[in-house]
Length: 176
Length: 176
DNA sequence: ACCTCCATGGCACTTGGTGTCATCAACTAC
DNA sequence: GTAGTTGATGACACCAAGTGCCATGGAGGT
Image (cartoon, rainbow over all chains, first blue to last red; front, top):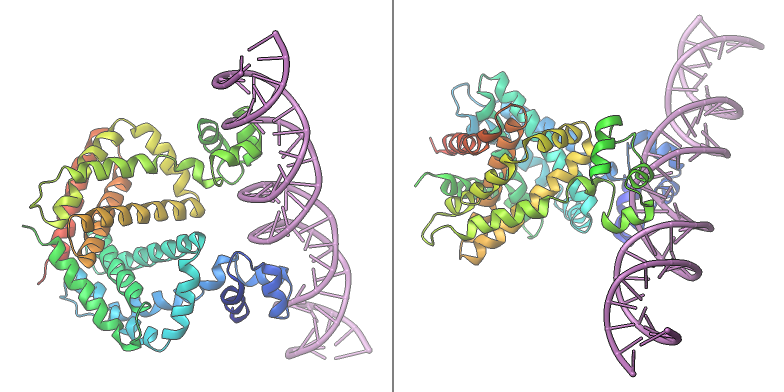
């Protein structure tokens, strides 16, 4: 994974072959594909951790919280984790921004995250429809805030940016 | 495109090679790639039309409408178009549902759609943040309703399903 | 000293995707 | 009507991602 990010940063994602990544890591291409199901996946091994943290935070929400409040309870541990990895996140975000196929992978990871959150809500007896929409709303808030966060210099701003996104979403969806 | 959908339906997406598609269409593989940038794209040529319709409906929204009302004004022409293509949409949805790489492509098309809607909102002097969130909310509502619509038998239900999603989103994001 | 397991290497193979050149038909100009 | 131009297609070689299969060798257990 380090070898891959170095090479992507040095010479671009497309211009880097899996054989090169494997060579820098002291392995063969065949072994690379035993650890990562494809070339894109090497940038997304952290998504499992993101999901774990979010679900953990979500589980700590009080029983009587609203669906969206349950979802956003996951944002605290997530913000904490990312705050320590601002530099890494920036480099990674730059690589992804330059490559549509990586953006596709990122989007499906967020979709999977939303699906997992939906599942957790349904477990807590939220209706399926409300669960899907609350989960998507939460993930969108995260995604939008994340995009802002990697474009500016304050690593600690993530939590605040998420709250701002959430407020904005609330005001946007408020019925007239 | 017809050749591709036939083959995907008959034997699955992965099991179908581009050479086979081209052969059934009476062309060569090289020519296929002159019309479609990759194998996935053959299922997404309609996304341009979707975006065009949505932006058209959006442009017809009254000047004083709220950001989300502007966005959802695009849903009318979209619902109309899809209502006439329920059978096609079902087959296509089945193929996509069975293949993660097609789901990725679908998600990025929706992301592009959201970006275009955001652009149209910004043109109408909506703030960038509100525009992004309203656009994503609208696209999520569409996506959720679409998934329900292809799973049931009433082609005319699409507009109603979108309204239901929108109401659900409103109630979910309403502050406590 | 032997056995078993498991990670890795090696290698051939398929397929998606691209660069490049040849061909051929439609159309234009004179 | 002949020559030139343009644009779509075919043909072909090539690269890189990804997979199946078997060989090998080291770690650990008996």
